[in-house]
Length: 103
Image 1 (cartoon, rainbow, N blue to C red):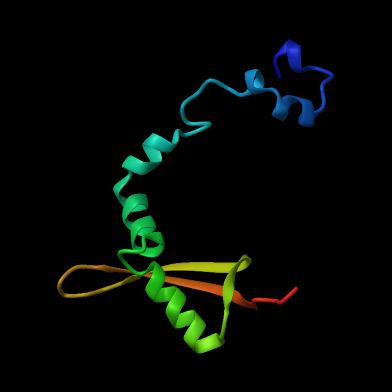
Image 2: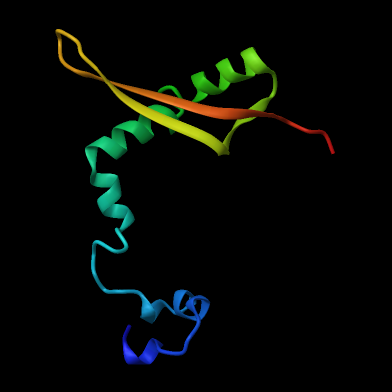
């Protein structure tokens, strides 16, 4: 721990931007994440209105009613499926359904 941080709480250290290490690997920039083909493809297929985002929302609403899939009580499973045309990626999202509540 650098001498300037001795005796300071973790909260003080985390709230001070000068405390963060200067290494690129410790805090990746959004630009580098957007350039990653795997992240861009997965994000685009699930969040973009042009692809499956609105379709998944419509299916959830049709099967369960009006509500959302929880991102807190959530499990994600990634598996490899052998295929003669090339290996496939199977992603399973398992989240608790939370119906909308009227206030």
